[in-house]
Image (cartoon, rainbow, N blue to C red):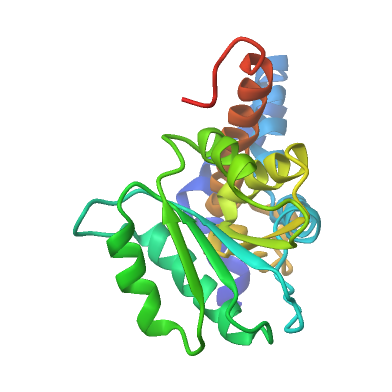
Length: 236
């Protein structure tokens, strides 16, 4: 009974049902549009369909141990002394994959301005011999891919290891530049399916709004790049 009643007492669901009452009571088109938008982007079942598509087609969570290619880890900021949490999550996921592979001495490419903190964090987690290639690829993901395009052998299979919210851009750019590549995402709670129980179709969940906000930012960024690449030099 607690699990059935408690979701309706959350502030966002009180607002949702208040919006339902207001839309029915006043019958204003604006209220109905706001209600539809709020429900569509907050509903757990809808968001889980998007998560399933994203995890199946964009950011893989399945890794084959017989992989014989190399790895690429796009940087996630930091300073000469510190690493942000997103970089630590990517490096931890990378180490896990490298330790699984049967490939002898795989080559790991890391693109970041400050290499030493990345290498210091990664190396203690590695249980096998690897080759490391860390370099500054550029100020943005788009600059990094321009550098990778000139630096990497396109015939060698690659696994890109990045954050789940960043995987859309990495996936699209890997296809654009013709890499034989897959993208593995270090998953966060936002991109994991939410429980969709008895109240799923009658409530909204804040993590779903976070999901769509991150996807909107990623997709918008990529298509702004596509629109401007004809007159913007992404090599600098």
